[in-house]
Image 1: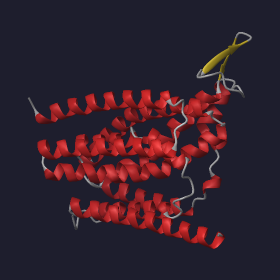
Image 2: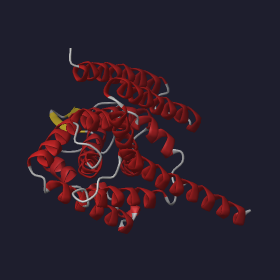
Image 3: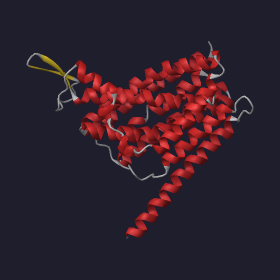
Image 4: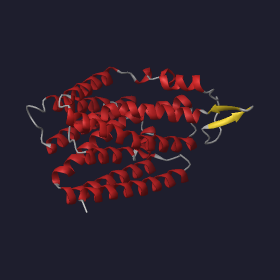
Length: 309
């Protein structure tokens, strides 16, 4: 039996079991997860990804494993920035803590499906049309510039076309009705704020995919590696959300690090015809950039706290 086929089976079995366990754990906490608990859950997801990367190393070789880890780090770092957008979406819709896990699980399941479609299309485009790698590279650099110029307070879910379209198609209730997405009132069907939140989250992830997938494609065009590294980063987002929700504002310079990563992989794609960055070197550069950004944020926060005291 083909080793790639076996690895695909192992991947889906691991993902199914892990998602089920995560769902049970978070549901048990009714959406109220402490920073300590969220930290342990995030560590568990990272450890699971590391174990799968080790399995890739043993079965497909060192090169594929390094590609997996590099893709995972890229996707995970981009997901950190995306989670702050999710925090703003939840705040806008005033989603009760007990309903947040349901929104996140639907967001993750939607992302699993959308990423598969996007990655397949992306790989086919780069394979069939070599010039697409330059377009993707330019897109990543543009995204980095836009990220640095963007102010978080500018984000307003009410201005998203998908939410405006929903209001035209179906009336929207102002209050929540448990975990229901739709309710009937006087014989008329209404969408609840919970459904609107899921819709905005899914649309946001679709936009995020336009950035993250080209970034991973700068590392490899192997559909298995691109998809598995993406999904292992995505399925841990619920735990990451609860962690970052309790630590919002503590990593002031992180977005600069993420922007630098996007610029790096964008340039890497633009010069790929003239120079090929070794995967190990790419991984090292990305880890160093993010480490510097996080360390600078921690130092900055400590200095501010010291002045206040």
